[in-house]
Image (cartoon, rainbow, N blue to C red; front, side, top):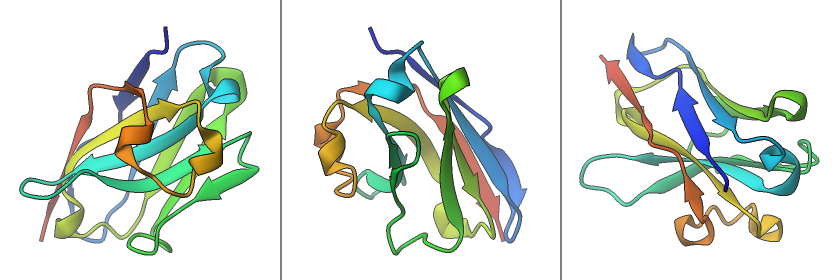
Length: 126
């Protein structure tokens, strides 16, 4: 079974950076598309990055493009979300998720992802 564990969340000031880490069970990152999502209170779960096939395919939506980047280390089955210039609106719980439907990587539709981690909290103060 696919297992995902996020870490790296925390409390930062606006303008600072965080790097979130998603550790997956062996073989996951070579087989599945990995996405990062965030859940902000009162809003729908939003996709912020996806990567597939050793970064051959990656996608960052316009909402965070230029501030967020995604990368993966297949040897470690680990995916990273680098978040720079954080804003208070970025605060929420961040999840990584896996889908076998890699062709849909740019859709970042939560319903396409079958496996989810437990989430890591990001707090940004102004």
